[in-house]
Image 1 (cartoon, helix red, strand yellow):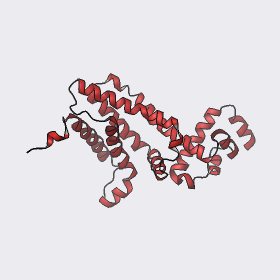
Image 2 (tube, helix red, strand yellow):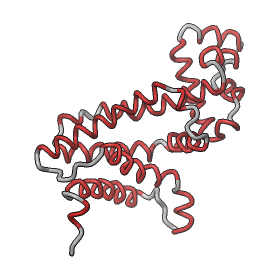
Image 3 (tube, helix red, strand yellow):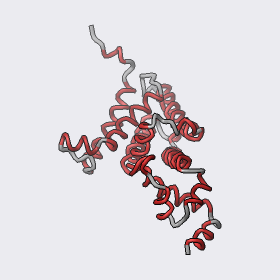
Image 4 (cartoon, helix red, strand yellow):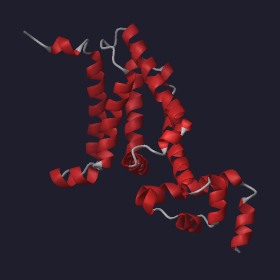
Length: 221
């Protein structure tokens, strides 16, 4: 039976690889790189460890492919927003909402990035794909900021990587730390009203920062 299932999967290798990556994402995000078991992934996908190694070259190769797929997903979502056709402030608010909603809906992504930080990004360093994928979001933000400055909407000439970090920090933290933060402050971060308030808050904070001409302008004698 297992042999017939494996043979049938060879007729659609891309679907087989995608099935493996979906299950592997859950396995790695739940158990980490060290704790994840390729045997468990093979069993849940009704394939074999040998086939997984054939496609991905081993456990670390599979883990890296999971990371690449996770980043490809969020960058593809951003491309689909068609932000260049929107006014600068609307484009930025749309991007922020998309990032916020993605992280909220994909805690596996947040856990995977946290796990890779534990490993000091050792596996990401081997991936040209991840570096190339993440160039696009910086270029997108840079374009929005440049248009905003040109149209007089934004006053501050901000570094697009800084803006990306500001957005990511808030959106990521409220997912990565929701249990500890919620326990300490007795606050349910998954409550719909709180989610809506936070989504608006981070967008307002970023836009307000960009509408200030310069940090020094806030200093008074």
